[in-house]
Length: 327
Image: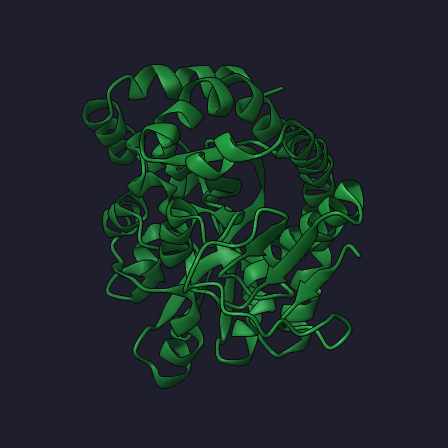
């Protein structure tokens, strides 16, 4: 019987098997994410697992794990290569796989979700995904992570000058670190699972994430200020191991492709609907919310674009192509 198992949800079956000791059986597919289960990443992955199970039918089992149960993004990326996990979502650290993925670390590059979908079709699948394949990974679809905003416990962030000296957690992305250094902050890469305690204890003054991740991890409980910068629209990539993909039966590949396309549209719609709702949720927790001066951040971001153009082969052309796809 087809089964969707989620180790973190009481409404779904608890899986007791070990998945790190050996690759899963051929008819068992494991979907795992490092993100919080109630973040958009977590919910998108859960929907993919559920819909894939329904599409595949009774001959297959799909298991789902969130909240870093099987590891963070870096660890899950390695498990894709080993074949012990079949599907995960990878976001900012994809730049560690191929530098061209840093296109999405360029501040204020993506106008809206329709723009991202156009970039996915025209650039990600034709230009970036083949780079991931060289590293043993197969990018299947590009979904929503969201527009990234800044929270902290020191002061509202209106312009880059307000970031001066603040300890800001970033993902393990050299470009995100470089961006925040350029804006005057003291950025520190850190696994997402460690961020709540770092904010709570003052190890970090603040962090930057989409609202779905901020509220999914309850950062509003340990932060005083939310500044709506929207500095990066961060996608997340449904990814499998290249060896896993090459070994999948054609009917399973077809099911994965169908479901991943439908979940892409679902994730974009969910992200858009959540934008205002989640700001209200953060305000209700007592967090002060301000709209940042985006033009001030845009004006301070020229060196980031210049570095991408000089350090990434074809970087300037990629930026131009992406910008031309905006409606």
